[in-house]
Length: 467
Image (tube, rainbow, N blue to C red):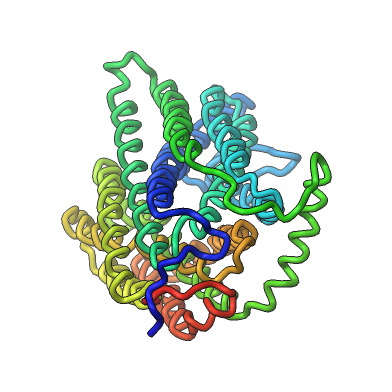
């Protein structure tokens, strides 16, 4: 077994007190940015945009007989007509496509210039600014919402790439699992508190003198303010930790980024073990994202649970995931990130299997399954982030993390397709939910086949004591 790694990773020249301060500040960006996926994507914007799109169809003289996304009034974009209820699903796909084009170049430019503080601030302003401007989406003006949401999601995911790439620069090999888990836990806690405040605003709209539409638009603004305000602290501690790889200025930076990206794509073939772990992650991450996205659908349509139960469950999972992420960090310190991830995937398999047996209208059984999901939800992702940071060559973290996020986003449609296909074929969502077990079983097998310690050495990084 290797000796403890007391020295910083290559390129990390921080004394311990400075490192600790930077690590505490770094975690606050998880807290700041989690408001966007929890409040905007998961809860408020999808239903609000659908309502505005239906208003647009009604204004055009159509009749909207139902709120079923498959049997709904049609809207038109660039001559293409589709149901208003499907708009948000298509919007997610379009935003993902744009990120596939933008994020790799972003990562290359970040690594080439090392202006991580400046670029994180830029992407936060871009994402949070577009989020605040969603308050202007009213009446039938759903097209403005489409444009602003694409800008907001691009800013969010680009900022996450920059944020992830800082992890190896402020933490030694033995600190990363605990730090990543702490950051992810902070994210769920912050996202949960922000969501609770926004839900309280929405439910208490009558007392505040707000209409339903106005209450949602207030939530857009408060989410943006939360995002910006809590980003100020991590920005205050962030600096250039490494020497820039290029000397370009202006538009030359963009050309240099293209050259760097091209080199990275060629160079990645020299790290097959890193790509092997990435492939495993993409499989089980698709399962995780699918469970998160279809849980409300399963609870509503298959189990017949009330909206209040489902909203309460979403809030509860945020806070349980806080504890779960911290627990995963402790377990990784004892058993290593790889073993802890594999144990988490076993638990995912058990929890999803248990969801098959939840009885209709049984709130307590649904809550019990949700607690199980919360315990593994944050921790699995947190340790995947820290382990991947060990497997990428120093100085190219942003480029590789851009591929990490793109792969995660690009493959996230497979799970919902499997869920929908099995549900359609069987006429029930129970077989559909249990079919997702395959993603965790396959992911378990693929992770087990990756010789992590050898992969870390191949990337030229110091080995942690336990992996």
